[in-house]
Length: 401
Image 1 (cartoon, rainbow, N blue to C red):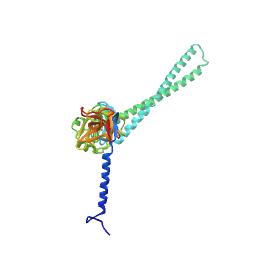
Image 2 (cartoon, rainbow, N blue to C red):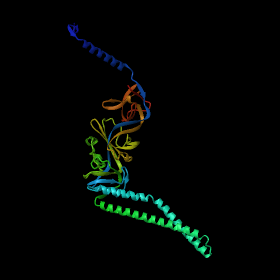
Image 3 (tube, helix red, strand yellow):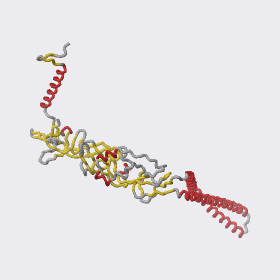
Image 4 (cartoon, rainbow, N blue to C red):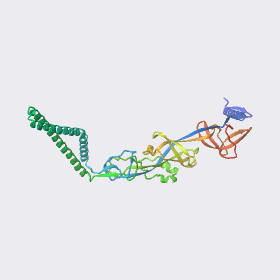
């Protein structure tokens, strides 16, 4: 069987014809492309919003605080709460505290609370006592009046009523005396236990005003807003994958950070966007979404844009909604910028000599106009001419293919 066709004394294999057919098809396509007329569209006026989805690193004004070596901690504030300087935050009990003594203190406090919760019953009892006193005075007066008038036929009845009221008065006095002694006993018991616990107990107060949080990752005193001007992409890559050490704050024997206080002031998000096609500049106002942490669209200002070899380091500054990221460090964000102006189809954007622009047709001539793209979505782009001498106006025709 022949392994090929002989042409001009040379054996030609079958794959040569396949390669030849591919070249012919490509040439036909190229000729059609060159001969086919270009497609046009007109420049419109509109608004477009560009959204970039990326990861972000939160930087805020915060400080972590440690507590003395302890075995148990009791907090009096909740996370996200705004606290004032010197406000009581927690009580820590040093290592070696007596669990049974603590249980006894809580039980005693509960008894005091239960007793005080029954004050309404005591008020009713006091009201009954006052009524009995009034009734006794009234019956005594009636008996004295009857004796003066020599009217003794109802005297036995009055004596029985008086005896009943006096018995009721004695019963109330006995109960009040018993209750008072019981409460005094509970207070003495509470005081004795607290005196024993004083040597183990340390009160923790707020060293400054701010929002308190108990989620710490070890970066609180390392990356702060004062270093934001010098923040680099290398630092971002280091901290975005940082894994905090898991600590047990409820029962530990080492001197570890116990809480942090966040100053509700300016805060920042650093993001490394994996391309250079960024449509915002320093000072621009953007829209920020933080899925899963905030349902609001947050207003952000572009603090810094640093174009790198194949990515862009972006730093955003915010002055609101810090509560949504009090306990978050690495977050997913969506950055949006809206622009209004001359609008063209995205297919009209082209490149020539490393310049971005559009091809404008006017009076039969086609001119390349260098532009700045201010925002873009899947279909449209907002553009602005760079050079004043170029003509670019509403309703101009642009080539889109």
